[in-house]
Amino acid sequence: MGTPLDGGSRVPIGCPAKLRRVTRKKVAPDLEVLTGWLSLAKARYAMGAKSVGPLQYASHMEPQVCLHASEAQEGLQKFKVVRAGVHAPEEVGTREAGLRRRKGPTKTPEPESSEAPQDPLNWFGILVPHSLRQAQASFRDGLQLAADIASLQNRIDWGRSQLRGLQEKLKQLEPGAA
Image 1 (tube, helix red, strand yellow):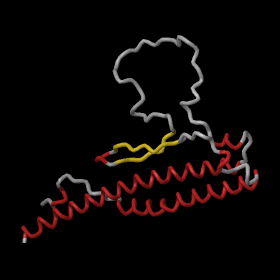
Image 2 (cartoon, helix red, strand yellow; image 1 turned 180 degrees about the horizontal axis):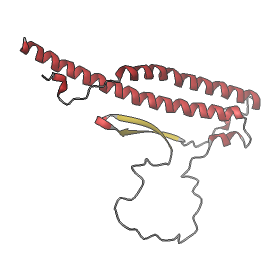
Image 3 (tube, helix red, strand yellow; image 1 turned 180 degrees about the vertical axis):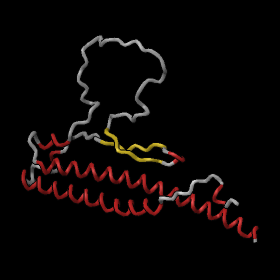
Image 4 (cartoon, one colour; image 1 turned 120 degrees about the vertical axis):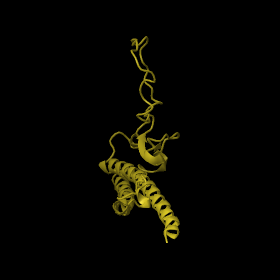
């Protein structure tokens, strides 16, 4: 005999494992950002307080990375960190099937400096300390971990709502059977 839970609905079995992963990962972005600030302090110490500060920032700043939300399975949102100016894989490619005629470049391509964002490390000079590069990498890793946590949290919330819905179905069926 079938139970109300057999009705083709998928119950998230790995929910406790996902909860453990989220709790472990929630500490990681804080550690990455802390490491970034410490590396930034080391670079400031190595180069001097006036060499690493707001006076070196560019007058016009563009983001190097963007947060991209895409629809995943069951209508869940999945968050990814993508480089600025880079299109998502589903946006790149041909829209129509078949052969295309390729034409050679008619004029010499000009360097497009506005398309690719400039590396902010160049604001501080050509030869920057390694700790400044480490700080940049730590902040990037922290942002990637935050996007991963948001995706995991969305899956956990979806699993909880599915479980609550199934529990409500079970409660509705129990009084009718008794």
